[in-house]
Length: 323
Image (cartoon, rainbow, N blue to C red; front, side, top):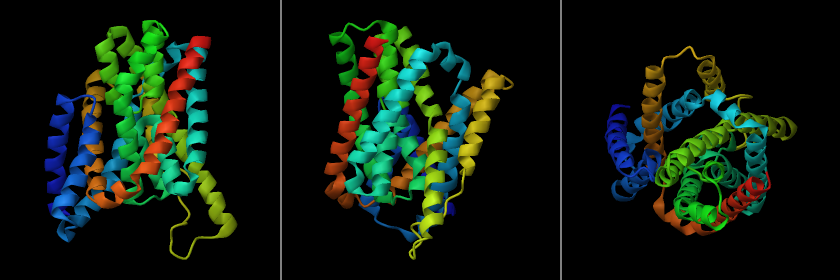
């Protein structure tokens, strides 16, 4: 595995540096772009395959698990039931509608698009793919779509806040509840001011909490399908675990963070490690992607994700105005 792991390490350092220079892009997005570029120029190199495969499974899922340490439940609860209801309703409706709109693209891709739009972008796509069983092209197309739309939201969300005269807190709620990537939320909040940034990040992390029950629910649904119809001959409909190991770990770490037993230095270090692992995993995913296939099939996926993103922004803005 050594050649592949060395390649991943170099790409991760580059992604981390680039992500710090351009926060709106985030290291995750830079990572998958580097991976796609590597595959396009270097081709499929078998000597790197074992290390890349290990990275896109074990390291990437470990990174998703460690996200649990970034969630401060006390901060989420502070906003009260109304804001939590806005987030939950907006996410649920957007997920259902986007999934339905994308059914013609295939079951796996529609699930990935719906999750990336409604929950938390690239990391959510990677997590849900453990039960959706999409191929590398499905994953890369979904991540590309939510990245493009999340970047567009950096300009669209402040415009919506200005048009409707939202207060700083309401602006933060809309940004956190409707923008896909944490880095993009930080870019919006950082430009708008301190209160917007604080509220937006906490609300965004509230959406991340929903990743665990979503993956568990989809895993249960898929197991029922397999029990009812049996596994497919080609193995594409195999029985998934009831609760993937990294989702169990995610929930445990959320509880550990809530108990307050970890010092701030450990939380801070875990944030850096999480970012590195996710960036590494995204590079490995990108390195398995045929760019020509993504370009050829990406238009309909972008349209579906665009409709879901517009719906999410409209729902959150309307709910904030009403509440």
